Length: 299
Image 1: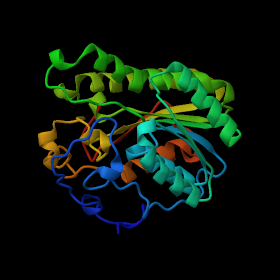
Image 2: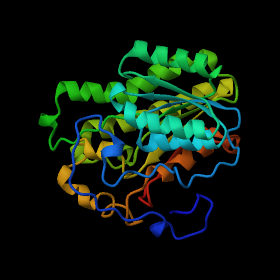
Image 3: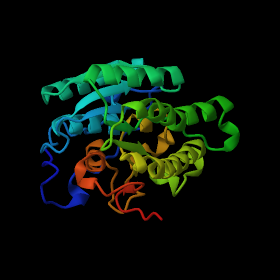
Image 4: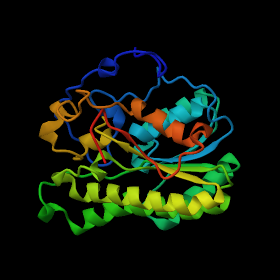
């Protein structure tokens, strides 16, 4: 078992170098059916009360980074509303169990974030279920590998933007009336915002848009006492990778050939960045992009 996040050790070997077998699932995929199953920090994340009493809405909270964030937030003392697709119920149940085991409230709201009306409903149900809202974490994303621009359908391009860019816009706009000074918003960009992979053209474009959206929004909302920041993960082992998020034939080398760390990240390694940007420890941090990418140089 990996030590908790406060243990001093060599980061290159903190988690194993994985060499996943070639495997594919239809979108959106189930983490529980992956080999190996991503590590969400269930056995390792140790909370210290950094988010005591907070009320957080997290998208993509059924698996991967969003699920790891939900578990970490709960162990830090926050109630959590989990947003995910209905097809991901099996994975979401596991995360709900983890949140409740930490003694926090879990509000599960399945639905399609590409719908503006659902995003507004999601916010309303989060406020009702938790008795308020003071933290938003937008993680949900769509990523589909296509070798050339000609192979990206109009429908895929639009759905990628609606999931990755439109949904955070819809959610933040609906949530603002409920966010008091001290509230936080953390959006999710990617290494792809700086180093776009040519076979993930639409995805990379959305991540650049999220970065810019967040930096502009941060300047607007800091005048209301609301901080907006971004986490930009590098290669991380999640369900995106086995639902044609990357070229399936490259899975055995996923992350190990790209990162100076020599391996892909596990979702558990991304969660502390979101905790930091949501906690009062980062009170003077706004409009920042925190790159969690294993040492890949970005602007």
